[in-house]
Length: 351
Image (cartoon, rainbow, N blue to C red; front, side, top):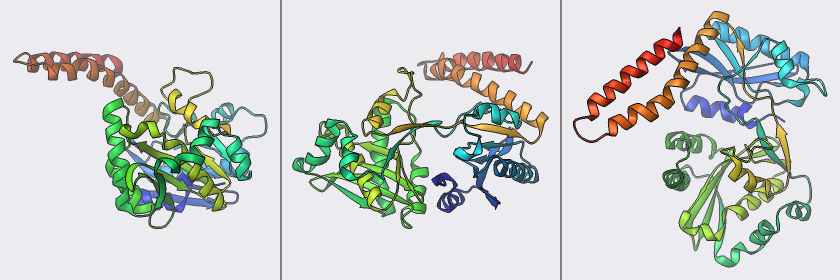
């Protein structure tokens, strides 16, 4: 059950984005990693990997990744293990990773909590696991003039980027950049590694969803709908439609890709977590994003620089940017004072 982010299709996409990609395999393990970083230091990033079928294979993968990172001049390797076989049954994943010398990353990248739907059940059972609202929408959405179309034409991603942009402006959430999604469409749609689903009302697009397919799992990656047509609730039957099409293709799981942790109703993902759980399924938890230092001193310096940056960003948002926006002749002096205060604060954090 190799995750899509460890697939050859993903490697191609990353190369098309301009990343240097490292791939390797050995007895019981395989990995895909990209070279990341900038002025504060370089590192290898292994998204939802490495894959391993035993703790011993996992250790061998870590050793090889560390060697590759050292040869590439990296400070550390950033990993996100998801293979159940990596840790002995009943063991504490975090403890096992710390025992191997890894440290919890200051930046969690891919979701450590997700929601899976079992596609091996028959269609009736699959629909029965959904809420009655979702079942009714699935069966009756066509009566409202809404249809769904699977596309592998890269240009159709413009529907997704358009509605994502409008939603981001209205709600104020961080969305994936257009250039990234356009390249994903160009790299992954023509070869069938991804599918773009269009929701249409009387043949006019009112929304879109982009999914990735691995050898056994369909991943619900990006989606957005027209706010003006929100009363149609077309997103709900679009998801059930994508599930059933994945089942027809022989895939066994549908990954909703990211939910809020259990017991955190105020989490920023709480709203769409409720939506994702309305299709039935079960929770899956991963250990999260972890760092394997290659250079102990270099990694410490990287963490210090990252901590300083994290402190600076809120300060910039609350002090510097408002000062820049201030009308009149006070704008520049105010921004200079805020910038000087920021510099003093950063000097203090280095100490």
